[in-house]
Image (tube, rainbow, N blue to C red; front, side, top):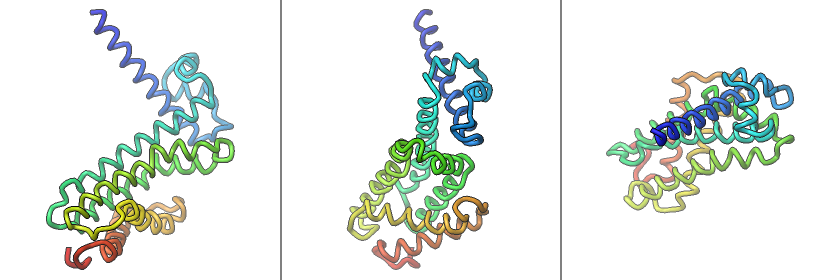
Length: 217
């Protein structure tokens, strides 16, 4: 019984910490760092103010950990979006379009947009924030995508080359046009347009990296 109570207590503490971090991110995203207060974060998380301090000692620590937690969640979702590349099937182009479309949808979701806005607005106050997000975000995603592309190169599905460069260029072909079309996230892009961006990105990518013609699958 003691072990069960200990395990339940540990889970409860983890759940409470997660609620605090999620609540903190929502408040920071709405208010900005300077205007956010710990009491509002506690109310958002559904805990008492002292509980916030028990888990995360001060507002600065809370901000950094909230950024890291949201970036990690976003990374996990993006890594899941790469899963079709484990077994891409006969139609590589269709698989790449599916993956690209999924990554674009995640890039445009409310939480990701809020994370970027918060990062841009607070980068001068927290110069290390970019490193915090990068380590749980684009850097890790590009590594995972490069690993998938390396396997496709070894299998002869893509031209042999630098898989890290291929991953970097694939993401640039997706995100570059999206940022332009969305006017840096200020204009909402519908799903049909996101799919068009993915199709165009994959077409260009395959012209450079496919062993076959891009229009031949």
